[in-house]
Length: 146
Image 1 (cartoon, rainbow, N blue to C red):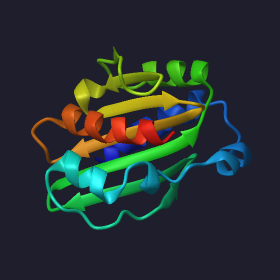
Image 2: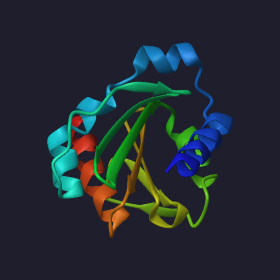
Image 3: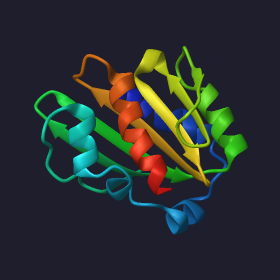
Image 4: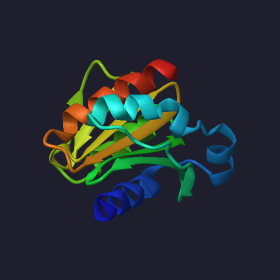
C-alpha cells in the first residue's frame, strides 16, 4: 500500500494546483466522511476508529483489521485539476459513474478517486478479494456526506 499511496500523492501533488493554506482551510475530516461503521460494512470486518493524519496535501484516515485495510485521503481540489490528476495515476484509469460528481478507478482497481463539491477523496483497499467493491461501498457513503 505504501507504494500506491506514495504514487497517488506524488501524481496529485504535481497536478493539484492547490496551495497548502487553501487545502488546510477547506479540509474535511476523512474519518467523518468514511466512518468506522462504513469501513466495517465495506471491509466485512470490525475496525477500530481511524486516526486522522496529514500526508502531504491530504488529510488521511486508515481503518484496518488484520490484513484488510481501507485508506481514505481527502483534499480540496477543483474539478478540472481533479480530472487531470486522476488521469495521471498508474493505469488503467477508468472513468466511473454513480459515485460523487466524478470518479475514476486507477491502477487496475487499486485506487478509487472521487470528486464532489470541490473535495477529492482517494480510497485504497488492501487485503480484500475485490478492492473496487470495497472502495465503491465506502465512497458512496462518503459522497453522501459531502
